[in-house]
Length: 310
Image 1 (cartoon, rainbow, N blue to C red):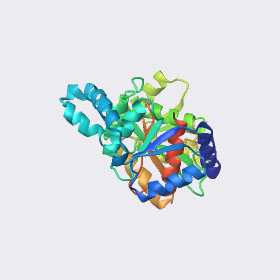
Image 2: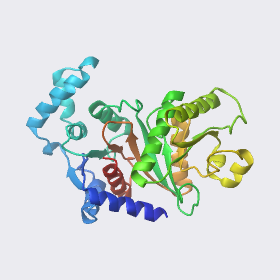
Image 3: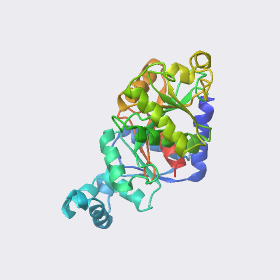
Image 4: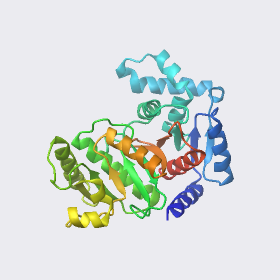
């Protein structure tokens, strides 16, 4: 099931032949990943280094970037200096429609990649919250979607409000449907299952669940749920016998960034899971981050995922 999902994802991306920018040309892993992407015909690639930037485009982009950020006090010279960085230049190419998406992070931190994406691509007004999702591929696991999960948010919003958490859940569900074509089954995670414990953190998750149901009644979502009640059918029968998910969640929404970041790394290291991403969601156009410890497969699959989101 897991390999089928990943292989199908690469095949579907290959049919689209989207142009994806990789603005970290000097990274050896990026160079090797590009060879694989081209060999498997997954996407068209533009590799960017400082020497590849067009001076005329920099002038055009600097004016656009200045107009976008002048309310923050940026000068035209600062705008020019910013877009002359391959990361921002790549984001501006996507904004202008000259490319379909960009993937970075092998040589940049998540905050660096997220800033370039948010500043240049803008926040989707329908979502209003930028967050990040990991595709977790867990070996020898029958939970989730045959061992495949979407974890969110694991990289962007430290302490989301109930409203932000609801938007994070909607974004993660949309990602599940768009890139995998699966029915998202969303669990809003907590240390409580349906009132088994009390506290402000529990109330926030319960309120976020209510907001999602109000905005997207078509989504299959439940909360608040402890992790075992969310993904283990036998436990769900005991803790939440009337629950909508029945212990079959494939999209896990964590209550805050601390839980999400620990959760994905714990799953990655102890369960030997693959963590693809983080994929940035809630933007006007597709962009994906990479862990600085990413593997070749992570880069290839992140490019495929980004292509499928265009």
